[in-house]
Structure formats: structure tokens, C-alpha cells
Amino acid sequence: MTQLPARRLLLVHAHPDDESITTGATMAKYAAEGAHVALVTCTLGEEGEVIPPALAHLAADRDDRLGPYRAGELSVAMRELGVTDHRFLGGLGRFRDSGMMGLAQNTRVNAFFSADVDAAAALLADVIREVRPQVLVTYDPNGGYGHPDHIQAHRVAMRAVQLAAEPGATGAAHTVQKVYWNRAPRSVVEDGFARLAAEFDRLPFPAVATHADVPGLIDDSEITTRIDGTAHVAAKAAAMRAHATQIDVVEDWFALSNHLAQPIFPVEYYQLVRGGEHRPPDAAPETDLFEGVAV
Image (cartoon, rainbow, N blue to C red; front, side, top):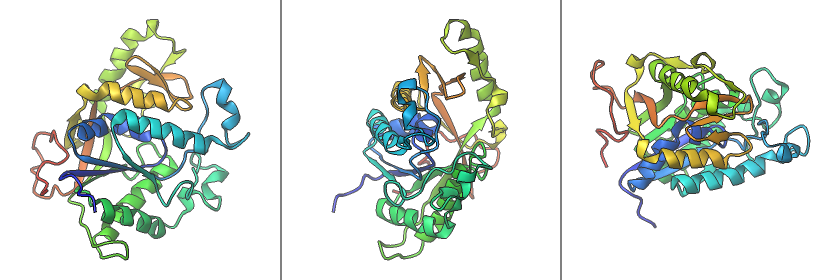
């Protein structure tokens, strides 16, 4: 059996590209430092909108072949980040992208949002028992911006942490020492969009977003952990560029299918929700997800 590195990080994301946009610098940083970085993606992102006109035929309402294509994009993105352990929850195509909230796709037979939470969490618990991460990263209860699959990924991840602490058929019980939610502090986002506005006239995007277009912002006081990925932001941008059906990247900026320009953030922020029981509420933000972890 291969000996795993001493530090092990598991990230749970909803669709290919989510990991690169919100946690790409963190993943690249820890992979470069020799930690075992594992990614579980819950769907193939079949319902995503396609940016390049030449690939528009892949969309769900046409050839419906976007999912496998995005799985290929994810493989390229992981190479850019230096991550070798990436897998889909339950296997390739086990759960389908549920579409945006309120759409009929939310309740289709294999939609991730409609999956039984305990059944899906049991699959993730198997991964946790195998990888044995000390740290797990996922979304907050609203999934960052209210997407059904992000909300479900939160539910499944949090339940899987509970299940993995019990012995299972696939391995010995494992307790995740720290659980984080990926978050966006209001002041940082506002500053990023101010910088974008100053640069916008020379960029090829038709319009610029504002911080008001970024949902789920929280007060800086709720941020417990700040991961400086400045040295790895080029890898993050390259990983985002690999998701070409979903993201258009230009220098330090990007746009999704709405064509609204946004900043690429080199520093990523988290809220510690498990494992910080003895952390003073007024303590300065951590700078390492593994701070205080027993290895």
C-alpha cells in the first residue's frame, strides 16, 4: 500500500470549474508543498452554458455531451494545479447536474439535488476513509450562491464527515480534524472589483460585474483563515483557462457565460466550522489550513 503524505486535504465541489475559481490557488499551493490534495466533484456539470460558439452543440438542449467534455477539461485543470487525485462522486456520471434553482432539472431521476443525502454521503465517506484527510473544504449551507448542487454538496460533505467517523465496509473509521467552508469577505471582493473597474477600458469584456453581483459575501470578522496563493495564481489562472467551455480568462480577470468581468483572486478565504473549538473568537486569521493539525 502506498504511503500517503503526512498532510492530506480533501475538497468537495459541485461541478468542474468550481474548484479552480474558488480554491485553485489553495490546491496548487498545497500540492506544490507536497501535501496530498484530493478533489471530489459531485457532477459533470452537464447543464452548464457553453461559451465558445464552436462547442455550443455540446449543450444539454442539443447533443447533451457537455458532461464528458467538462470531465476532460477538469483533467487538464488538475494537471495545471499539480493535483493527481481527482474523482467524481460515485464514479463518472453517477449524479447529474441539477441546473439552476427552480428548474425541472432539479427533480430529474439522477439529479444530484434530488439524491438521498445519506446515500451520497456514504459514497463520500468511503473516499474519506481511503484518503484519510485531516482537512476537508466545501461550501457553506447556501452553497456560496444558492445553486442546488452547491447546497447539496455542502449537505453531503458535512454528513460524510459524520459517517466516516464510524467504521465502514471500505475501511477503518476516520475523523476529519478540521472542516472549512470556502467564503468571500466583502472588503476583499469590493477591492477586487474596484481594481477591475480601473482596468476595464482596456479589457475585451463587454461589461463589468460589481461586487453586488457576487452573492454570499460575509463580513471580514467571520473569516478565520486566509490562504495566500499569490505564488500560485498563474497555475490557478491556467486551470481556469482549461475550463474553456465555462470560463473566459484574460490576464488577471475572467468572465463566465454572462460575459461580466470579474477578478481572479490570488488569496482565498475560509471559515473554520469544525476543529476550531478552542480558537479565540478575536484571533487573527490562520494562514495555514493545517494549523494545529496532528499529522
